[in-house]
Amino acid sequence: MSRDEELPNEELTASILYRMSDVTDSIIPNISDTLMGQARTAAIRKITSRMKSSAAEDGKYNVVIKSFFSGNEYYMFVYETYKDVRLVGAPPSSIGKFGGDTDNWMWPRHTGDFSIFRIYTAPDGSPAEYSEENIPLVPKHFLPISLDPVKMDDFAMIWGFPGGTERNLTSSGIDFKVENFYPPIIEVFGKKLEVWKEHMSKDQEVRIKYASDYASIANMWKYFIGQNKGIKDLDVGGSKKAYEKEFMAWVEQDSERKEKYGEVLSIIDNANTEKANGYSTLIYASISGVSGADIIGYASDFSALQSFMEQYKEEKDKKKKEKKQKQIDNEIEKLKNNVSEQFKNYDMATDEDVFAAMMDMYCRICIL
Image 1 (cartoon, one colour):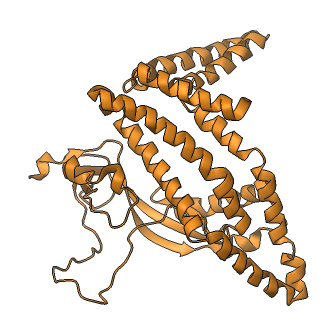
Image 2 (spheres, one colour; image 1 turned 135 degrees about the vertical axis):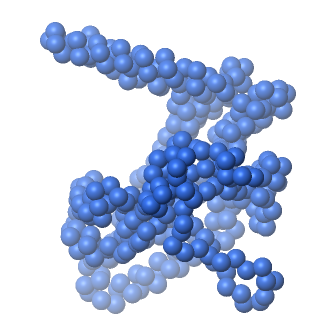
Image 3 (cartoon, rainbow, N blue to C red; image 1 turned 180 degrees about the horizontal axis):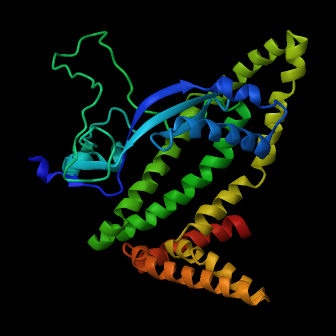
């Protein structure tokens, strides 16, 4: 394959980490321990916005500041973002999706789920928009690949950034997940997949249309099932309670610690208990009612138009009314432009059955 055959990807970018640094000491000491909720978030955002603006060097870099350990540490990541990224190749789906849903989230898993891209830069090596004059990126360093056989005690590493974890949940937080969070999601997603699969197995066109959405929901569904099972099988809640007992014993040994942390677990426990009240019903209402059938989601796209029309009706000032009319016209045009994309992979018969199944669940759980 020659480089002339590589395919450009208009909206695809590649970000390479230029540097990272621990910026905790620039954030935490400047935030009061008593600052809570939205006020605390706003104060942190104000500090991090200033830091990101400075590190970006007038747009040369893309800067991200992330919190770790439930907001107790902060790290700044400075990236160079390249906009000319071309597809070199990808394995056939028989390799890329080998094992399908059956092997997903399982170990060991044997699948060639990858694609190969090449980053191009301007002739001087700087990031640039797509151009035939661009050249392949010359990296500052690359990991050498050894073809020698693997030996015991060879170095191994996990490559990549985790999306996020909840390792700092307390035992009551674990109980909340197991009792109020996972079950409704598993049930609703499971029912939706069941209806989709019935239609997809009967009609090749429907199977193609819903393949991507099915894979996405199935991925989350199986993930939550595994999370729920793993927490129970490994008695994570019990381990958390044992750790909390040790923590409270440590707190009780010092009067200052007792004053600062003495009630922290009870406060968290009470918050989780309060949050659990009606939370499952809220999830059912959200994912079976509001976002159950595709047509309901599409209908919600008209909410902005409805709001503009109501404002137009109430407005008495002529100039403001004209402005509202422009907003209405623009929103109508946007909705018209989105119609073909919205219904490109839509099957009415399938969505009707999804709607019936979701409404049955919604009414049974949320109304009756």
